[in-house]
Length: 335
Ligand code: KG4
Ligand code: ZN
Image 1: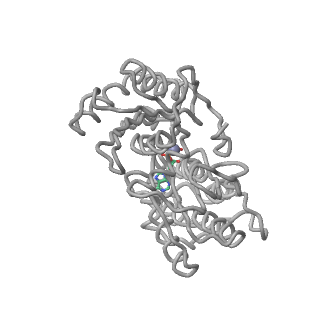
Image 2: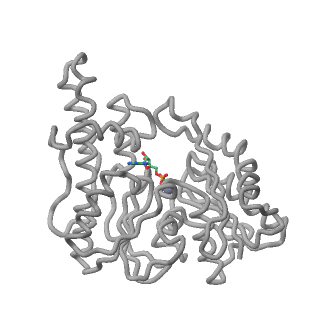
Image 3: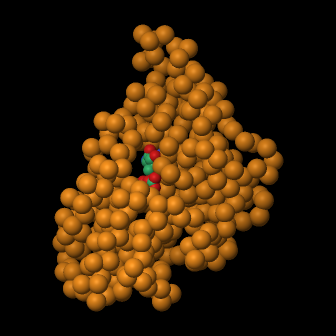
């Protein structure tokens, strides 16, 4: 089955084509317009999706060497995300499927992220899923494919949001994750001791707003003319605190249920320092780790196509009147 996947939940207009465990094309148009605001402006995002999504789909078909008539099913991200943005991809996906008389399925964005780590082969459950992106920092237990039980989540900012807000405070460009990662390479990770929150035994929820405030307070203490010389150390120490908090939570979750198979997905899973420390921890704890390839960590259409193929394989087809949902828990995916 050849599946076209469409992703427009935030600021990426993306289309991917997936057939039998292989990606045939994956085209992502990242909207540059938001960088000057240091964050995504929802109305600008929807308008840009309207302009970009059809050319992006066309390009994906060209790369795959396929025509629209070769597509057997269409999947589009249904939520969670920005409502106006989601509606663009969902309506285009439904229209293409309806016009061609092929099935359509609405995909959960986070299930899409999880399928980015399962492109060639599905992960054997039970496993733990740490989903770390601009909007989510959630740990799930996956007892069987397609079923998700929430173990812990952030009580305030998501890890990616902490990177983005931290970068803004440091005067580094948006998106903050890659900017902080690059600046951190030139800094010392223990130059500053930023807090790793919520370390009570058995506590699997997270919090990233405190570390951001700690960074702000530290910046305010540094004289303006000295600050440029401290950016690298601040970035490295800030990144270290976020990475440590995430790994501590994953470790606590694993120990609480004895599961050593872990999948880590979402934009923050691309972070090089995170991957370095994860690999060391996995060796100590004997974990089997599943990560997406670097190019599939952030939002893309191939992950939506792969999750769509999974849903189609179970005989699921969405009704024509399916709507976009800005808030949608992964636990409620079957409802
Ligand atoms: O999964 P994603 O593309 O979109 C959402 O679903 O939110 O994640 C985007 C987030 C942004 O906050 C971005 O700063 C962060 O992922 N990110 C990173 C890195 N690359 C992207 N964070 C840390 N290190 C990175 N290399
Ligand atoms: Zn995402």
